[in-house]
Image 1: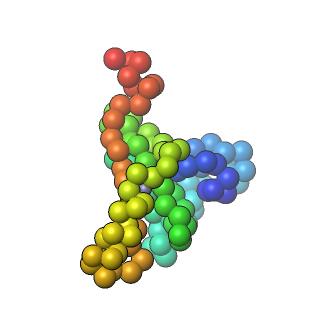
Image 2 (image 1 turned 120 degrees about the vertical axis):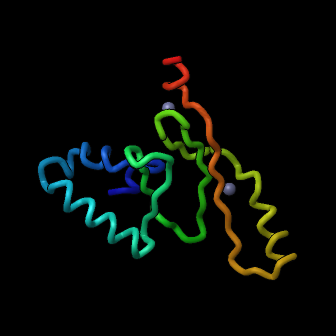
Length: 116
Ligand SMILES: [Zn+2]
Ligand SMILES: [Zn+2]
């Protein structure tokens, strides 16, 4: 359900999906999301509560994001990660295992930029 869409999803967009609409009430979905978050299956990203995005925690996979400062929209970056190499260096120089990172860039999305 959550990963059927590319990138992070908002709760709002979950409710608007045809599969969910009318078949369960928002409170149930929120409870489920909270449970999944507690179990670290999903987690929240984004700036504002009203546009909180959820993403799946996939082990061995990471994504970098760009977040709109205005509307809180989150996009997955479709480019080769610039700092993956650094992970090895960090790992070597600190002795840490399973080093990972996550980047969030901030800016104004094209939609918000148009409104200005
Ligand atoms: Zn925006
Ligand atoms: Zn990265």
